[in-house]
Length: 386
Ligand code: SF4
Image 1 (cartoon, rainbow, N blue to C red):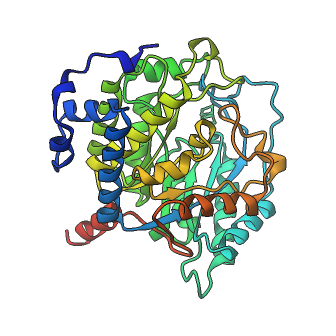
Image 2 (tube, rainbow, N blue to C red):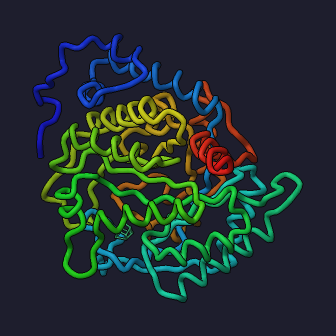
């Protein structure tokens, strides 16, 4: 793995204040900002990103209650603990009633939004099942407090366009419908390294096509990458940010690359936790400065590196948290990486923790609000003017 801290940085001589006071950033500026690790410099980066967040998306932090619907997956991403080839894992599928019950719990506790996540499947039974869940969730969560029902984010992998359309229709709430599909890295060689398991595999092209299809189908589109992949450079992360820009994404979910016993990449190691945390926080801050008005989630995986990882991410420009509402009996079977936090905790104590995370920052909790990104709202206005 490349020791990126020791890389010679061409832009090392540049003046940090000058870069941070600029409204636009060259590739060299981005690489330089990502490389920061001295406390004083990192504090200056965080402050600039925090202020930019306030200016662009306001002071609110939005919650998306995460429900891990099923750990059955047809794919074999090499880093992932629930990949198809991990036969040591007990597979589960939540029942519709359990999913709807958690959605109601979220609505009753003021979350305003949920995210349904699952291993990737394209079979008709699964597509129908999700449609049925979406219909029922909408029917049961429309109320005076939530006149359009719960906002929904789906994180269900690559699907055909007609499937995205079916799910959008079933949601009954297309104004608050989001889809998260991370491309993990824009470096095709690294992408193939992560996904080149035998048998059915992901391709970067396919994922990018999915993001474009989702946009055509009216979704608020989110993507993201892993930070600290073995062999990844700061230039790769800079290219990731440029691709976010090119795709015009509305939301971002980026997390550290963490090892998994159930994966097959253990021999490549993992960055030292403190350095990985700092690089992840820097990536959030720089993405905020470059992309400005998008929503950025603080990944739960940050809490593996530091028990206050997500709280720190808020101070570096994140404005979305995703408390995991999945019942404890299922959660331990949904570990994409090792040491997933709070696997034994039920929804109420998970919610308590994220509330504390926000209260510890200088932000407000947006109870019962959808929190669509200004980037998406501007897109709607410009589309309607055409
Ligand atoms: S990362 Fe997602 S698609 Fe890949 S194996 Fe894991 S659950 Fe399946």
